[in-house]
Image 1 (cartoon, helix red, strand yellow):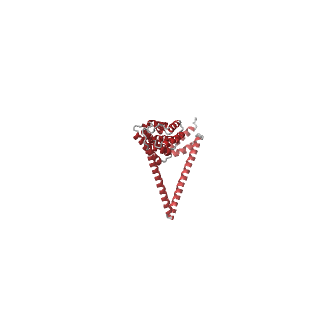
Image 2 (cartoon, rainbow, N blue to C red; image 1 turned 90 degrees about the vertical axis):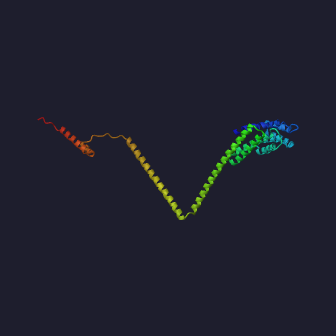
Image 3 (cartoon, helix red, strand yellow; image 1 turned 180 degrees about the vertical axis):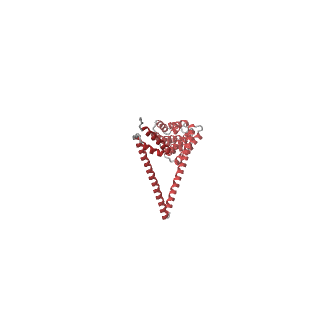
Length: 289
């Protein structure tokens, strides 16, 4: 059950117990009708179908009794027969009944339109939903005019009006989306016609340019992929080499050191040569004779 209809349905249940007739005081009857009483008892017990049969008998005896039509409408609402309920409730609003019969009938008509509008909104039929919400607001407004200060009618009037505005906005968005879709379809069709009417040679040149561009793009993509693969291979080799044990440096002969020094500059070379002379002098045997 839609929580937004709680207030409406609570009042609907009260009306279904025959309270409308009790409020009216049966001023429109010479005496209480047995069929109405039996229908009220069955409706209060949840037997809407049985109540409707009794109300039908009462309506045939009292065709101008607004309270009877109101009760018939309530029983049909409980059965889910919205169309039949509205016919009966409209007869109640058009009657000369006094008391709460006419405002209750307008109120319950508002409830019936609201329920159908809510179902249409759930199916995203925004155009139909806003029409039905408008009907609901009209009947809730009539109920307020006939019974000022009815808080339930005022609440549901504001609720239905708000839902109507929401559906109008959604319908507007839907129409804009459909228009954009139609414009895009027309644009595509115009482009297709233009392609069909294009000069064959020009069309072939355009196609060739597109093919060449695709080849260039593919070649660039392949080259970039090769470069990435080479970088990855080099990175793997560097990582593997870094993980291998490095050989310890070995002592090199003086000749190799001298050659290395040549690369470092003449100054280092002279220093190495001086070291070599000093080493030879130390290796010569001392004369003790």
